[in-house]
Length: 306
Image 1 (tube, one colour):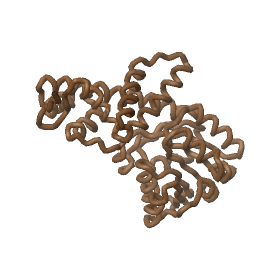
Image 2 (tube, helix red, strand yellow):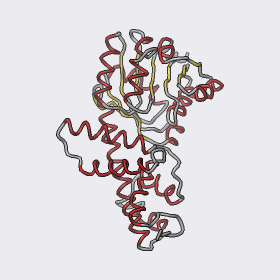
Image 3 (cartoon, one colour):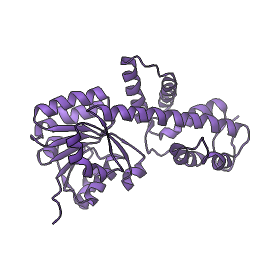
Image 4 (cartoon, helix red, strand yellow):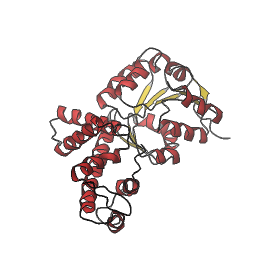
């Protein structure tokens, strides 16, 4: 006899949340979904999800309620605001925030959730839209060990090998570590490939020469092909990368940790935002250097803008 699966509520059906929800359905979890964009909700209903009309309604009927939202303000509104999760959550149930937000906000929300007799995990993810689709996201989790164990199979439906890294807030702290490395990696290979392009090297040949050496990385393999094709369709938007670095810099400031390279890349992201690129993929960090150098990382040629 198969184990009865807990009912899951999912709030936030954006680029990442929608495929994550679909993977929960594929894994056999009864799913209730809510998003302020009704079209996203309506897309999940034919796949087997039940429609909720508010975050509160999703929490009322769920054993585990998940949010996947852009930033701290949206999470606080969905959880603590009117018709929010806090109004509907029941004692003994679990709230999991899979958004990437300020760890201090995670801890503040957790106190309110626990005051209702419920439990919380913060479990942000790392990976592109493609990894959300194929269920191979990296998931870093903060919270109590017994709650992590209870929810592990749910998390494994959306990602590979979720890791408990500490108490509440530790998941989002780990995500900030991840995002610093991601952003600086993109900035570093953007500078390097622009130098190569300006010098007349074919970026495709450079990529093939270095990808399996010490300079190789997951980000290099994911982003350089799309950069060479001039494809900046968002898998992870510049606006979200900027938000994550903002949170990292705020936490670092409070802890007296200098992050000079992170600060520099954040200035590049601000400049790109001012040029209207906030909804491009974060690989568009390369545009900052390309414009200064008047050279492009382009497949098959090294176009230079004079």
